[in-house]
View (spheres, rainbow, N blue to C red):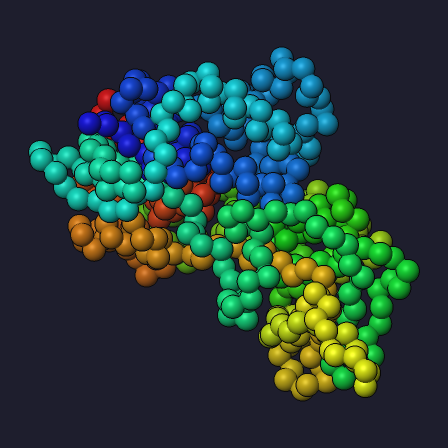
Length: 430
């Protein structure tokens, strides 16, 4: 029997395992991490690569270790890292430094050996109240179960993209950011009017990205820098700058006690929505994006995609109309004027989505099964309702975004996982 079985091998699951070992004194033989990917953190690394992130949004103190000084100490004593691996504010670390530190600390703690490759399917009670977790590789028996699941199970695909296999989401499994071949630069204009060419002499790919948050902005900047592409970002709003994607007041005693003082989960949901800043960009990404907009490499189009169609070349009496491999994107302006002449069209070589993940843990198959099997509570916003010890039901605990109703707005961030893991260590038995 496994004493502490963690489901999810991302940042939350790995950091929780370290806290159990270092803070709660749990021996490594008593901990296992169930995750379907070949290695721990694999999905996190894939998402970081897909969006083209260069620096974390988190401070260099928010690390994959119980010691907040760990990453800075590692950088100081390791060759190949210098001041260029930190960026203001708060000396945010480069992805390459953060990744190297993760690998170092995981090896030091023997975390890779805790990995069981598999997918959780359902949960039931066994003898003496022990938990029996059914997986695609067989059943696992555990004394305590710790759920460390991401904010969403599936990337969001708008209705117009549901049947369009050629439209990739940057967070789709297996997504590759590379541009296989460059095409003619696309055009933008009003339907029924001649479209003006971006650059009739430049042979480069034109990529359209739907989404106005940090993933879209980072991916656009990466495409320009790495592949010399021209990019159009289609979003409902103008880019907005914010150092953090949540109010940092809720990390500690300044604001969190007030959040927890309310026993009305509708009020907690209101605070969560008010004190998180989704769709915002940190200062460095915002500055790079604006510079590339000024240079003409990136354009920002306010509106919503209404439909897409394959683009065809013109035909004469002796020609058959042919698909050019490009896509025509029809865009409705944000003020929703339905006049046809105000609808815009954009012709692009590739169309990609950066629209985030489907929200609501009540959509996660495992959590939905647990809720139905054990009557474990959800609130109206789709989040599970844990107790103050982060215990959702007897011996089933939550960390990460799933614990947001107790940890507050930073629950899904690294610092929020630190706070959750500390609580967890005070409530689970060795």
